[in-house]
View (spheres, rainbow, N blue to C red):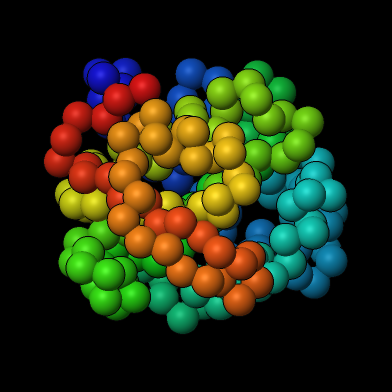
Length: 196
């Protein structure tokens, strides 16, 4: 069970540490600098180079900037840089779409749930980083007594589907995303022990 691997003291800090990763909370100024092409300031704040794959996510950056601007309480659930602990390199990003209990999840029958998404950048894939980052975020949600975690995954994304199934997620719905097309929706009961 992965819960035995955690020191909960990191769950009250800005960053989550795993054996190989630091999931660094991306604050409002950092997101602003990325949106306004103030890359030197953003890199100095993050402490590493900004990958092109991150800068290509301008729609996501703008959305999370707006979320944090409108609701400072979203901060805990916000977007995080996935960074290697040994080098500091940013290899992806992960975060919850909203705070727990969002209305759109309630319409799916999930009252105390939270949806998350992530991306590992191409050169870092197939090394277990996605699973390690996902486990940290699931543990954070459990620590804050969220009942259900949700993932929306394209049927064509075989690695993410396999990861979700290995972690115990169960497909229960699907929807047509305007940008990403068909997505299968998976849920995980966080009251149950997490598995690797």
